[in-house]
Image (tube, rainbow, N blue to C red; front, side):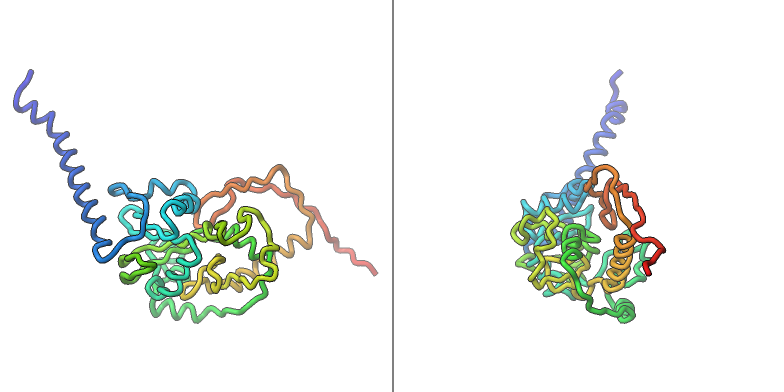
Length: 294
């Protein structure tokens, strides 16, 4: 039976949905226009309303972003939800953001890792840029240590964090001819830089000899190798981390013979760091005994 009341009830859900989508579209246009009103934003893929570019990150964001950078260039603008984000994928632009405009990108965004793993930004890595962070950094002592080619090549291929700890701009600025809005998050894709064929010969293969005779280190002076970041927000724990790692590795190699069971699968799994997707099964056997000659 047809009636005016029944027609209104049937049309109401469709009308409500149409109004909701219209509001979302208008809001999207307003938000999209605002950051670039003072200049040209870097190129990047078109974001979806509300979702932004989150759907393009996939399970391995550093690899997805490296693929997008081949299309859009070494400075790329994305929206992660409603958050403006810049992804840098070349040494030259990493230097622009992290050295030339170091002070503007010295802050840290509020992310889950900062809240739950860094005591709500109380450690030196995730602390907001300011007096508290300066005091924390003074507690850390930096010493220069000798670096060998194997360590450098390992960090080139398997950096502790492929996108570094994110930075955040404290005010708007122009970098590389592009307008960067205030509170824009910055990711430096060192995974992509470490595999850039214009910088490295045969970049997907482990070749420590590439560093022999070359003055390239990872303390933050060479932007093609930045496993620990650089400038104001470079990691102050490099000496301690390397000492612990080198001591542990030396003991494992010196004291044991190792036999790998099965094939080694190098597929990655994304997280705060990038561990292997599948565990490696290795069986140790004693190389040294408690008996000494003499």
